[in-house]
Image 1 (spheres, rainbow, N blue to C red):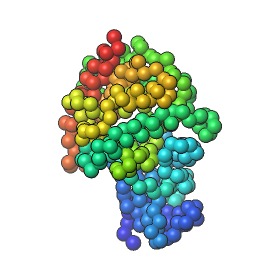
Image 2 (cartoon, rainbow, N blue to C red; image 1 turned 135 degrees about the vertical axis):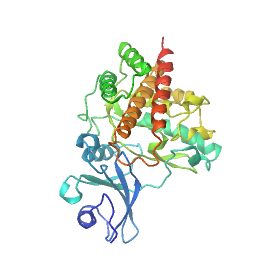
Image 3 (cartoon, rainbow, N blue to C red; image 1 turned 60 degrees about the vertical axis):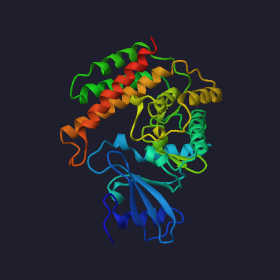
Image 4 (cartoon, rainbow, N blue to C red; image 1 turned 45 degrees about the horizontal axis):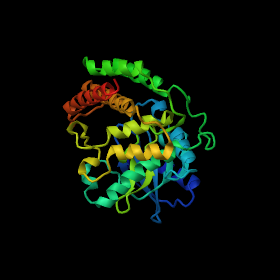
Length: 343
């Protein structure tokens, strides 16, 4: 049997047979997504049935940053609602099985819209439908009663933005490779104008087309993926972050992993109006949350750049280091422009 990096085939096979109903050995394991985030494998049984297995990235990682049991708990809880997620099937917390915890969920058909090219095959109607369903799914997620689904103790409920600004300011201080005045000015302005949190919701933390499976024909969101940044907090942080990944014709808003530059999707302003109508939330300060989303992403981008620069990410062949640096600069300027619109 061909070895698979990240999967200890014999013990994982035994675990699947014992813990996943309908799983029939032998299995094939195909890497769907890898890299700096969690590794995702498509598992195909001898009878053709498919599952998905997620585990932390290889190498030395902080357990708290890649908590498989927590991620499994979240999708199992959200799966009780009308928010589309892959059904959670089981979780293994015994490192002896595969060297790290992992969980298994059902395989869901759909396309991850993480580039303009992926959207080319969509009809004009499907693009608009996908835009509307994406924001409707977010509104539905934010309407979930966290106590009713068993997530009331997932995290602190209040002060989300204040904690986030403090956290990412510290991250910037620890990872920056140069001085970037825009980052410091945005951080100051964010601290000086902390918003009143409009309720407590499940905050996905990375909600965009690139973290969903979409049916290209109908424009329906088949499943929301990648819950590793999920917590309890201010719902408008997700709404603002979606604006970071939405192209309405401004060249500085182009992102390679965003499908909306393909054209034909609804306007971001239409999504805001639709969300406000569904939820009753006041979005008059949405520029604050767009600024926060751009600023946070800028800090993350700088951290990746710094790790590559210092060799912590290993082999660098094919990695465009300059793109991370330029990306940080561009996001910082977008954040500054957004936060200045609040003045």
